[in-house]
Each structure stands twice: as structure tokens, then as C-alpha cells.
Length: 281
Image (cartoon, rainbow, N blue to C red; front, side):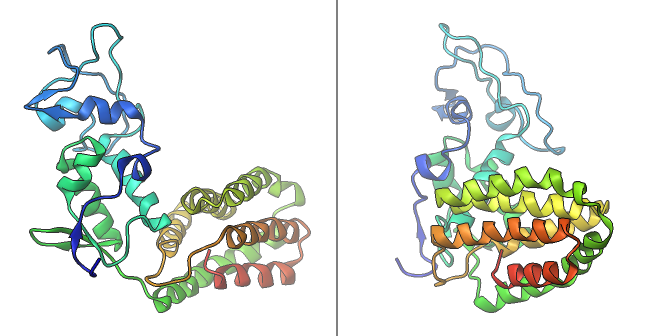
């Protein structure tokens, strides 16, 4: 497909496989009436979405949704709005490369495959545009940003400038037992890497780094570093695909870094963490 040409979205079974099925079923609308609806009251939701997000299905479509008569009413996911679910799925598709750099995707096409209207898809894409992951293409949709090797190298440099001094200070001050809570996270990252699922590993990788920096007690630092890390995980256009062996090797660096930090081996920790950033994770 030519670069920039708009095309249909990837199959929903792959792109949105992790989104609860009731979201798609409860949000699907045909002829103005939800599939399976009998006109009963709104489905409850206890989400913690930001103000203005579409938490209730009837807020999105203007009609209430209900389960069939033979089944109890389903509730929307408790912790995420529909937009939040779509945003999470799109972020994973970006990391995995399922949304291809340079290609244009329309809100209606993605929404149709997801079983929701185009509105939450567009809202999610607008957030991704603010993050620099996609670009708005008027009257067409959103183009996935094309990342270069230089872009990724610059992000790695900024991350190193921000995180290395903090980690070295922690290596001097945190007692050996203070690192024990991070070992399960390192193990989780290793298990995710072994699956070869880049999106799954990306989440575990970021969780490990958030916990590392969290020991510094600076929430703003964690937030800024995590956003930089997220951007660093988007693949470069025409870059070499990450193999399972690459992910496994990257996860092994977490374990080695923890050992150096727990041993207060500052020199070893610096070599490892700088090499980790240079490797792109």
C-alpha cells in the first residue's frame, strides 16, 4: 500500500483482542437501536474516566443499552471508559507495529471494526496526536507518525540525562533489601519477553522502570520519564523488527541492573543503565 493512503483498519480480533467483549456488544448499534436491547434503563458504570469521557453507552449513542432478557444486565468496564479502552488498544497496536507508520486510518473504519461509533476512536486518536504518535489528516483520518532512528536516539539521550543520575543516587542510598519489591516486576518482564509479544513486554518494561524511579519519591519525575519511555517504544519506520531474542536480552538487563543496585556497585550500575538506554528500551 502506498504511504499515506487511507485503508481499512486491522481486524478487530487482533487489534482490540484485549478489550472486554461486552464493550463491543453493548456499544454496537443498528438502525439506532443497540443489538440485543429491549429499551431498558442505562447500564451502570463505575469508571474513573476523566471529566467528559464517554463512560455510559447511552451517552455515546443517545439510547440505553441492555442485555438480552435471558441474561442479567452487563456492566461497562468499571475502571475505564470506552474511549480509554480504545486508547489502550491503539497504543498497543502502535507498539506492536500493527498500525503502520505513514499509513492513514479513519475513525469510522476503526470504530466499525471495534463495534463502537467513530467518536471514542477520534477522541483516542486526538490524544495520540497530542503525544506525537499520529498526525491529523483533515477529512481523511489520522496518519501514524513516521519515526526515524535519530528520533529514537534523541529520546534515549534525554531519558539517560534524566534517569541515570537518579538511579546512581539510589544505588548509593537504598539498602539492599529496598530493591526486593522490584524483583517480581523484573520476572514479569522476563516472562512477557519470552512470549515475543512486543506490546505485552512494553507494558511490563515500563512498569519496571516506573518502580525503579518511584524509589526516588518524585512523582513528577516518574510521570515525565514514563511518557518519554512510552514514546521511545514506538517503532521506527523501516526499522528492524524486534525479535523475541531482543526482548529476552533486554529483560535480562533489568535483572543484572537490580543485582548491581542491590550490591551498591555504582560503576557497574552506570554501565548497565547507559547500555540499556542505548539499546532503545
